[in-house]
Length: 145
Image (tube, rainbow, N blue to C red):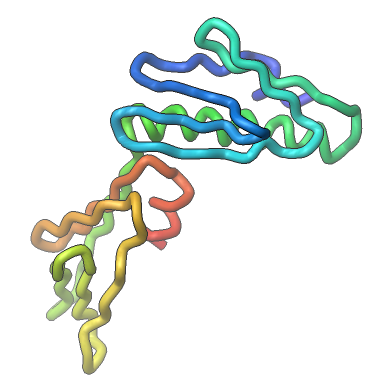
C-alpha cells in the first residue's frame, strides 16, 4: 500500500469536495477542479477528511492508490490557494507583453510569437518576468513549459 494513501487527506477551510458518479469535484476561492477516480480505488469523504482504500489487491490498484492521493492533495491546494510559476525572460531584445488574454513574445524570430492561454490560467507580464497562475498544478506547469 502507498505511504501517501495510508494517511487521510485533510480538506482545508474554504474548500468543498463532492463525489458524483466516480468523479471528485473540488471548489474553492481559486476555482473549480474535477478528478476522475482511478480504477481499483475507493474514496470515502468523512468529517473533513478523505480516505483511500483498495477495491482489489492488484499491482495497478496499488499504483493508482498513491496517484489518487497525490492528485487529491494537489487539487485541494490548488482550489484553496492556487499554484504559480515565474519565468524570467533574459536576452537582448527579448520582450514579453499581453494582447488581451494572449501572450506575445519577441524572442529573436522575424515575427512575434503569440500564445493563447487556456481557460483557468492567468498570465501576467511585468518587465522581464512572466507570472503564470491557476488552480491546476498540471495545467500551470504545462503552460510554463
